[in-house]
Length: 95
Image (cartoon, rainbow, N blue to C red; front, side, top):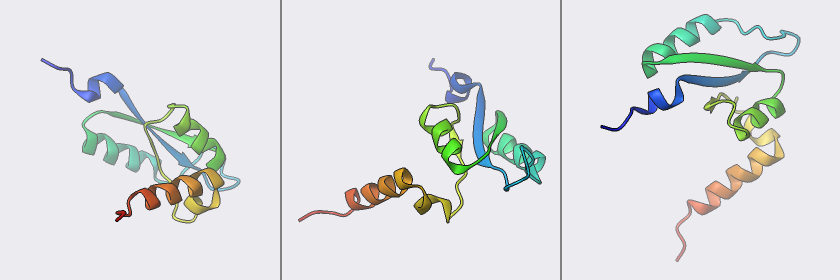
């Protein structure tokens, strides 16, 4: 019998960016943690980043399993914008 992916991960880490000047405080984080824990059926931990560059680095280095990006953050970072553009181009069927 194969192990469940939840067992392989142990704790599902979600990256999120705090508001400027808020430090590591994100309003409603306890409710988000509870909602993710119930939805995934496993322990969830939020990792609060100081900015989007740190969040991208955490995701790229596999320190988190999932990152929450705002709609305005995605095109603002060149690596994400380039990756998004590439994925969009790859999804277009070619003749």
